[in-house]
Image (cartoon, rainbow, N blue to C red; front, side):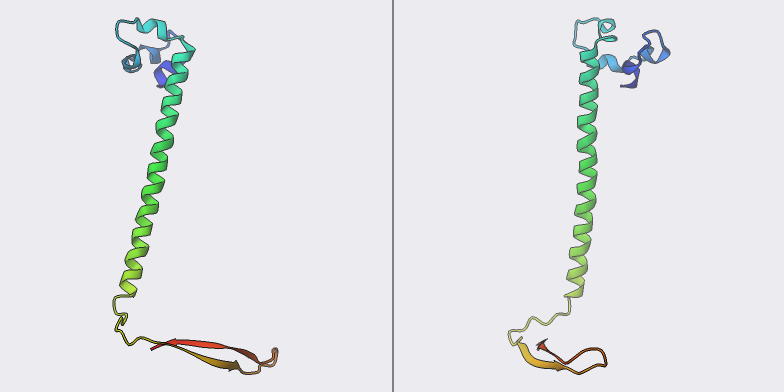
Length: 112
């Protein structure tokens, strides 16, 4: 890509032949050196694939961290009791007075 984007046709970078793979068959590559449309198409193609490459890397990293979080949660719940006699107990509570606040009322939840 760099070899075709130079403005100097006689510079050594245009002597490299890699960009000629994008020239249609039976066409003279020298006609495409100064063709702005050809350069624009190469640039938009490069930008398109760079954007999706970057998006793939970001999504792969996000997927990896999601799998790590799932494994962590699974490891924490390994010893969790899932017997049918689980129950949730709600009991009213009163938070004692402190020197800065008044008493507070609430519910205490416990799983047995």
